[in-house]
Image (cartoon, rainbow, N blue to C red; front, side, top):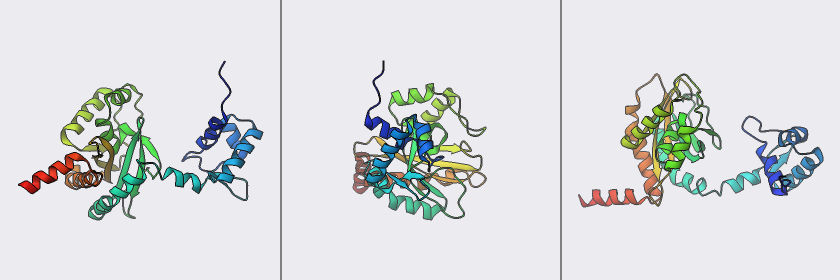
Length: 259
């Protein structure tokens, strides 16, 4: 017989009930989604609201509170990475005036840490704090290609969801693409999330030289081919890696100075 859920687990259930598709919930909806009795849900939402993890409006509808956002911003893969990356993301945006994104890998998904988008940029489904299946996105392919072998095998064994007719759903094709990403240093996702969008991405190395994030530019699929954007994307990723103190970039800089 399984032990009853702890108070912490119940509170996390309440927070987990909120998703990008469900950003606002009533008490009865929270109770239904979490499987908690209405009285328990009422007590927990009250405590979370007093602490600031939730906010309640005049209609009794709950949303995620700013206190939780403040705590989440302290995550080392978010705050420090974003601060190091922003100058290079801004430069990449100025060079393209298209969507520029920064993401990290979480399981078999990518989580978007930052995004810069112009008024005339191609429409994308992603947003800061949102997640998407890694196998379909440029940043996801860049991250999976350099992930631990165990993570790659999990991705290859998983059911690969199709978002468009061009999404990679064959594990053999995904394995080939990941090998190509490692060989070239860039990842291209052409119409895999939306047929109108083309993503060009490159990995970012951290202080121990492992890949900790990836950045991308997302442009109209009907425009210029990916090769036009590859140098700028590579340079931006190299700049962020250098700012994070990746040893490989320091060695490259010393070699250039010596020559």
